[in-house]
Image 1 (cartoon, helix red, strand yellow):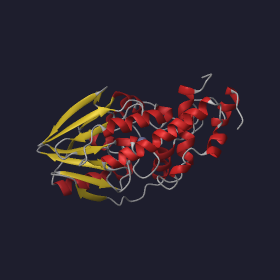
Image 2 (cartoon, protein in one colour):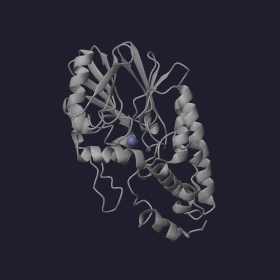
Image 3 (cartoon, helix red, strand yellow):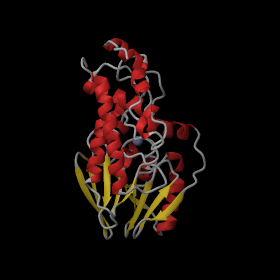
Image 4 (cartoon, protein in one colour):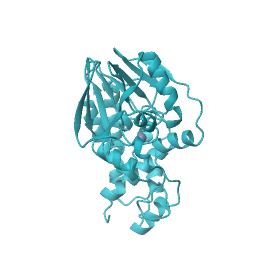
Length: 315
Ligand SMILES: [Zn+2]
């Protein structure tokens, strides 16, 4: 293991200064190809409690609920699939328009309904930091493609810094902030009557949960986010993750949080000991969990980078 001085370490990260980051793992690897070449959506819907629908295949897992006034969406998938998603929810829920949309975070694979529903006058609820990220241009490399800003008509119209509550017919939605986890604007949403928890981006569901450290996420924050989500669950809670076909249980979250916590501890020790990214990957702190969540290289690389501003000895 060789120790890199700060400047060499920074160069090894991205070829330039810290903060000029490379694209993040789960978010970018999923959203970039989909944005570049939107395919016809193959949407699959299944009921999830009374007047609630889980729709998969739009870019992220989407929940749609209905009350007398119309549809409430939790997340919106990719913009390319927005119209198909809305049409499907209208048909399956026997409702005309959507009046409310909740954004769990700002990423494009979750905010694709914003413009469509915003133009139709829907209220859009999000954390204030989500509104701020959507209001600006994000680049993952200095010369990388610009992401955003979202046109004004698609921006959140009602923001929170902490928690909130929303009545949807007989159902009560409680949403809350997960601090700096996947991004710095993550909300979870709990359907209290149906006992369904929507995790937003913090739990990937079908991959290692890679934090977007350019917009405020980090590995230890992700672990804390899991703990906060676990506290929202009992043994019967059905958990809707950001992606993935299978619903999680509390036990799934606990098992994954334990793995992440151990990997985060190892990464922290390696960062403090002066490991460079290549040394860290060679030591592979995820080796005991091979096959559980797929190839860990991108997750480890981004998670290690996410520690730099917080843990590096001379940062
Ligand atoms: Zn995301």
